[in-house]
Amino acid sequence: MSQGGVGVDLDKSLGYLLKEASSALRSAMEEVLRPLGMNVTRYACLELLAQRPGLSNSDLARGAFVTRQSMNVLLQALEREGYVTRPAEAPVGKVLPTRLTPLGRQSLEKATVAVRSVEVRMLAGMTDADQSAAFRLLRSMIHSLRDNNDPA
Amino acid sequence: MSQGGVGVDLDKSLGYLLKEASSALRSAMEEVLRPLGMNVTRYACLELLAQRPGLSNSDLARGAFVTRQSMNVLLQALEREGYVTRPAEAPVGKVLPTRLTPLGRQSLEKATVAVRSVEVRMLAGMTDADQSAAFRLLRSMIHSLRDNNDPA
DNA sequence: CAGCTTATGTCAGAATCCTGACATGAGTCA
DNA sequence: TGACTCATGTCAGGATTCTGACATAAGCTG
Image (cartoon, rainbow over all chains, first blue to last red; front, top):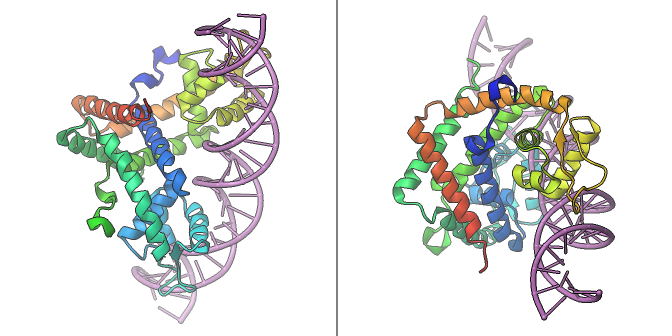
């Protein structure tokens, strides 16, 4: 390769490995969520609402790592199907707080159990120290990736 | 929450953090690749071919973590646009080996530099020991997520 | 009080990806 | 030698996501 062989060696790339790990996790999650009629983004949305009722479309988009548009489409479907509820008019500004319905909460319960089993599997073979290290390292990557985007 | 509050606490979930890190990396990569008329999957495809010429559609799909169908669509576009070439007939069985064209290689050079800068940024703040640990931990997660899918 | 900036919700269209299915070639086994 | 399994390439349709844009509300500043 040109430039003195200075390519990105995918076998030694931490970015590539991160992508691989994320893809493996997503596949495993989709596998247990599919029978529940749910995908990863739907699950994330419902879980976020269970832990912090009243989040807005924008909040949920950020929390689930998708755009406001994608989340809007999902929320409209969830609302239509009775899993969440939003006020017809914004109580403050333009923010529409979203809340789980009893149906939404019930649906989430099964999904949470399924997702938890995947996470337990993922952590098998890792000590507590490993898990702490993984947390620290992933946070470091996130921080570095976002921090440098600041043009200031 | 029911079950004695046994939900998946997203703030303490390694799976959620993995998703966040992957999303941050993807955003950062898309940002530098977009001006080059490329996205992450295209880049991965070209990079895989640079390092291992002759990969098939199925090989590339596995290497870029997408389905054979998605990769087929991408390969057809890359072929039409002159970045890769595939034989009209399979030399062996049904496998069509794909190779980069000079245009493809040239396009990849710029992308590689851009992606490398993102990876360098991501690793800022990490020691060599940190990077080794990150590798080991991510491999462990991948292994655990895939190993247990074996119904045997 | 007017102008500006930021944030939010939503729209339309396009891009990307997945699922299910089908046809075909190679390898294995009885 | 035929049947079976596995792998591959491709098709069609649908699902999911993104980009760019627009309208509106709140907060800040001069």
